[in-house]
Amino acid sequence: MKRIITLTVQDRSGVLNRVTGLLQRRQFNISSISVGPTETEGISKMTLVVEVEDDQRLEQVTKQLNKQIDVLKVSDITDKAIVARELALIKVTSSSQLRSEINGLIDPFRAIIVDVCKESITVQVTGKHEKVDALIDLLRPFGIKEIARTGLTAFLRGHQPQVNELATYSLLK
Image (cartoon, rainbow, N blue to C red; front, side, top):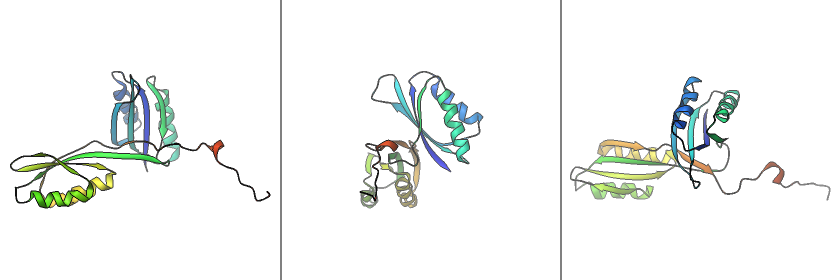
């Protein structure tokens, strides 16, 4: 089962290598990884999509990640309300005659053309990976020259209710 794990880490040299090395030694496949700075200077956020066989192995990897010196917080956000997006740049073979057709094709996906040259155009799309995959499939017949994808970036949506914040209901009022 695929799990989305976020890590808040110190922005130091070697942190990414130690995290991926730990996962590699325990034979976890990383489907996607994205890393970037947060709103706090010196702190970065990693979003990992990993393949995990069962809950026991998930707990094992979470505990191991928490033991890393530069890791401040580990969260499995797969089953929570999240905002998750991916970005893709897709270079498509295109002549001047096909550009309007491609533009009409990408418009419903809210994708934009970010580069145009004589024999190709580059399209940028953001959204859920299913949306990105669907656009790539539609552009394939035109001839895809190159694709670059960021991998998933995600965080929790708004306010997440805690167990003790949930309202209690009684039929005996």
